Length: 230
Image 1 (tube, rainbow, N blue to C red):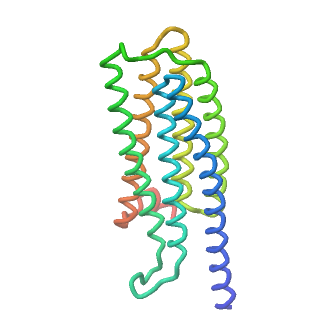
Image 2: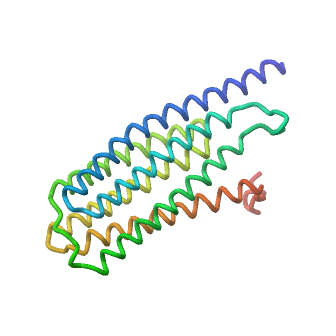
């Protein structure tokens, strides 16, 4: 009976690792394409918001590799240095994702505020930027739904964090599309304003991930409501 139980647990761990790796590689491919397209078109079309969104996609790409690294190590068995296994790698990866988002947010906000202080430097945006922003929105929302479904199936907190990272990018693409649309309608300030909003959204998400990961790594106790449910 014990052998069957051990096999079952090992099989589930293996399935979880494969699911995380597969979904994350899908995200890598999507984010690589988005980063290249958004930054290139943003520079050509003169859209600070689209460039900011491309940098956000780049942070997603870097986060994907953090997840792949953590997934590889978290499945290792207990050893002399880790008596309870390596599952904390997931929490550590979530913390890295959060700190990464915070760093990206600071840079985005700084750049946007600088533009708003020098409005004469705001260029007219070309229409192609709007189509790219809308395409990024659809891609990110689809990626979020796919990754979240996989995360819930295999019960991976790390993958849930990465999925919501993708959702934050979808939300930012929506804001950027609105900003670009405003610029095209003769309201140039809306493009850097969109970049500023995206930066604040990224910062909020980064703080949330970092704070939760720190609590998990320090073994935060369950709330009264959670204890009551248990």
